[in-house]
Amino acid sequence: MTTSSKINNPKELGQYLLEERKRLKLTQKEISEYTDVGRKFVLELEKGKPTAQIGKIFELLNGLGLELHLIKRGEADSWKP
Image (cartoon, rainbow, N blue to C red; front, side, top):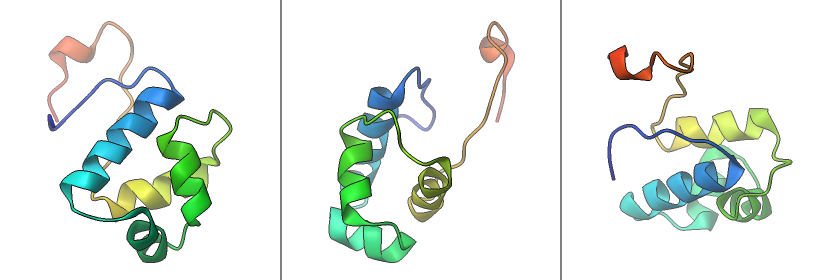
């Protein structure tokens, strides 16, 4: 997996989080317990459910060691983390 990825929709976010969880060799149950987010939520988010709660998304990002960066369209090529 790359260290950064452009996410355009809930399905892409879910896929990215699924791949990162698997890379870390964590089950849905383990990451849900570690982040105090329900397993059902993890499952739905990984499937791309568009109505996910943003607070829970941030809990999962934190638990997976990820950060969210917002970049204006057209400026992504010049962005350096």
